[in-house]
Image 1 (cartoon, rainbow, N blue to C red):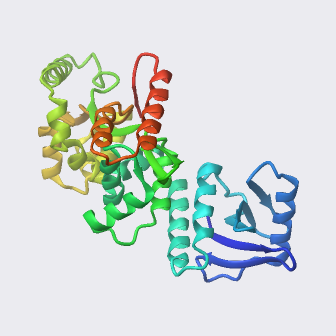
Image 2: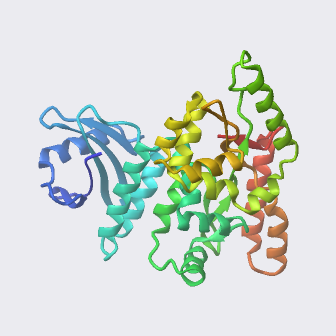
Length: 358
């Protein structure tokens, strides 16, 4: 993505570009905005349209937004032929709404910069890399902990982040886009509470055995040793202890090179030297990964011993917390009932398992 533009449609004079990021380049010519408007008029059932200009070197995605009786466009600009799926129209609609609401405030410059970064990063990362950010990003990780206590209003969430955790300048709508995109939360307006957020899928990460034994059966000695150590480790594996001590998070997820090594070893075994290259020659870390049973080394080759996967699961544990919070008058009856209903709807969709390995 080259840039992001916020434009107003004046009913008398036509398009009026308001702000863009990065700000250096001039706005596209007026006829581009007019053609984008015309395509929106021809596709009134869709809030998002794609437009390719014959006169320009760019492709465009435009999301139309109405606010206080006025019409606005959030326009994403790409080099021609490089336009790829960024994120869903619903998520872009939330983002455009958030930006439009900030137009006449001093927050708009920072907000459009954050929106640009968010959209651009989504187009670069694969699903696992998106999920890593829920553990690496301090604000996202904190929000996830808060949401695990059950329903919370937008106002209360913002206040808690500011007063309890010191996050004073938070664009909550932009941050929560990733939660909505991963289907972790649902946002609903509740009478008496306005916007509220409900956790409907929780996220964890844990080690799991490799899908198949990576050592060739012809290497009988190495194969026996590998199988024996694998059996002993997982037979005595205390997953609760490891989650509480954040072993996987601290050892793997918070270190980009380690996670990259694990992902590479899923595909094939590697030499010790190749592994050290990925780890930037940190031999102590290499030995730590062997000691903690993430990798297995024999005869100069390295094999995956513990894969690291993300687990999405239904947070039915919240029900007990909701009961206590309602009894203590921390949440309203409407908030309590809506979250129970959302969790009940989740349980009806479950056939035999209430989790998904990503």
